[in-house]
Length: 116
Length: 116
DNA sequence: GAAAGTCGTTACGCTGGCGTTTCATTTTCC
DNA sequence: GGAAAATGAAACGCCAGCGTAACGACTTTC
Image 1: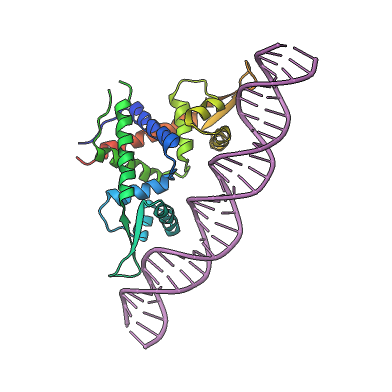
Image 2: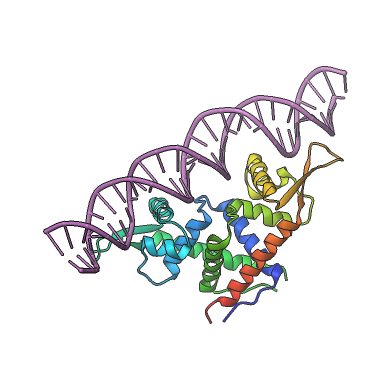
């Protein structure tokens, strides 16, 4: 079921979420990092560096570095692919799932708060 | 009229918009900059550096720098307040309004695209 | 009208992401 | 088996944003 938003609702929603993230989220992910993280969790695996780079229209080092950063935060994990040892498979983690769960709640909450 | 979203819809929406911004928006605004921009355009004026800093829970130099950057992009303008010349009033611009209009369209479009 | 307070900006050093290039490892193709 | 291709990471210099600490302009207070 698609969601129909007015222009004002769309911007209000984005505003509310962005504001909330800026004010309270100390993890301070880049929009790129967020897009990567969401992609990993919402699109069926497997995910590779090369695949993500192509999807996001970004160079491979960008993905590598984002994975470095988010890996240190525990939001993501990396495992060598045993069937083709050139590949690295990007794995989800509990922390990452929790982070996105909270993000989802935030979006929903801001949607509910939209002016009547 | 509040918007009711499922968890999956909320994340899917955010994902779609973030992905699209990363792929196509060459302006590459920080989440902070976006929050500032949205606040300027969605909340009734006047807007001052100090006010924005307090609202976003951020130090004043952060606002000054964001305004520098977005000012150069033409998304925002600054004018001295004549009634109290210590203040700077932040003004909207046509470019800024256009940018947010496109952002709103993007959010709406992604909402419409949500899986049925 | 001097002192204290307020506002926005600038200066400083730092951190982290960026793009490009290079590299090591592994696989594919003759 | 050996050249060529593919994959992800590391190295390099660069740029932009960050937080803290000053600073200059202006206003309020006494």
